[in-house]
Structures are given as structure tokens and as C-alpha cells.
Image 1 (tube, rainbow, N blue to C red):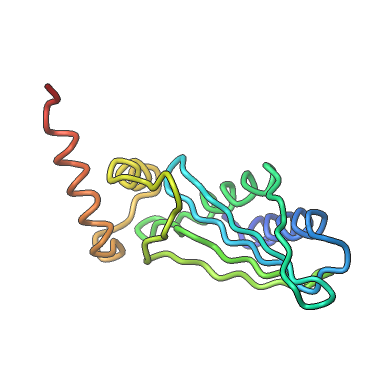
Image 2: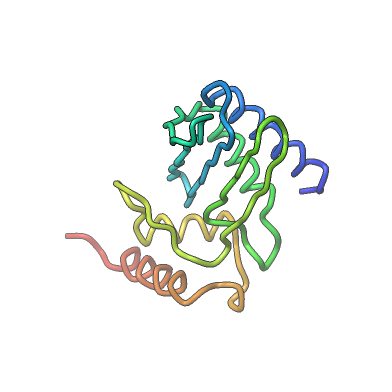
Length: 149
């Protein structure tokens, strides 16, 4: 993905968050976690009095993060498992990406086959495959190779 396209998607994410947050929010944070077809998002806003408010997650936000994740895939390196987007309205933002750590999903959690399928879609070189992911892929290979009765 070209840098301009990444910036366009990040701006789109910011606009979606801005319109989803309570009026007068001082900060809006969204963390997206994705593995294969599975994904979760946690979104919160800090409102004017400093308290936190829940923000509903619109479907187009998930689509934008999914497009960003696929677009950021790089040969050998793979792509991120989670991204944290922090918006300071109206337009200042920062993003951090997690390429290497396993993400704690609530229910249902991705299983080894989910990680295997994700790796097929977003391949990584061995040196860019963390130990925990390698173990998941090996478990998936065993599960796939074992005939069911």
C-alpha cells in the first residue's frame, strides 16, 4: 500500500470515530484486533468532564481497519494483528501497530486454524514469525493432518 492510501484510510477511520463519539469528546481511542475473518474492536471516548464513554462501533469502521490491515501487508513481514488509533478531535491522531504479539480476544477466540488461514493470506518469512505464531501454525498443521473419526 502506498503511503498516500494509508493516510487516506487513517483519515477515514478518524472521521468515522469523530462522528461516532459523543459531542465534545476530548479523546477517542479505538483498538482493532484481527486474525483471518475474526475481528474485535474496543472503542472509548474521554468526554469534556474527563469521564469515559462507550462508543458504538459502526460497521464501516471495521471495514476500514480490515482494508488497512490487508493493504499494509508486506512480503516477508506480514501484517499487524492489532492497531491502536488515538484521535484528539478534531483531526490530530496517532496509530500504533502490533505485528508480533498475540492479541487477547474475548469470545470466541481464534484457534490455530484461524492463525494458519491468516498466515496463508498474509505470509511471513520465518524470521518474522514469532514463536507463539509458529506454535499455532504447527498445531493447525497437526489438526489438519489428523483424520476425524
